[in-house]
Length: 97
Image 1 (tube, rainbow, N blue to C red):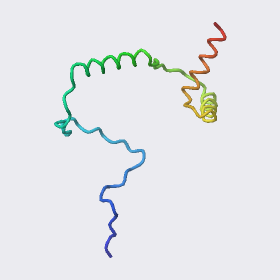
Image 2 (image 1 turned 45 degrees about the horizontal axis):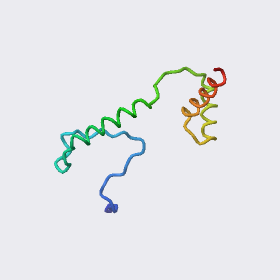
Image 3 (image 1 turned 180 degrees about the horizontal axis):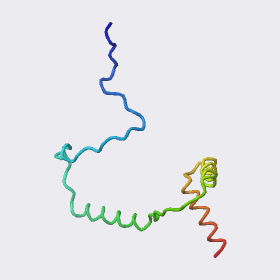
């Protein structure tokens, strides 16, 4: 009995499996044009302005039941739970100030 071949010769993607990043030595960069000095300066300025707007990463300990309630509330409001926590804390600090 012969094995039926699939239409694609590529192996199936495995869901959730992390792939190793491709090494730079295996990438052909020869067809990419060089960046001008103006383009590089513009990229640095854009990166600097984004850095000022980013949020600070912290670690906080929450009761597991509280975290679960916050996650469920975030799902109901269709937003990421960390964004919801940020909004709740922001509103609370405005009321206190």
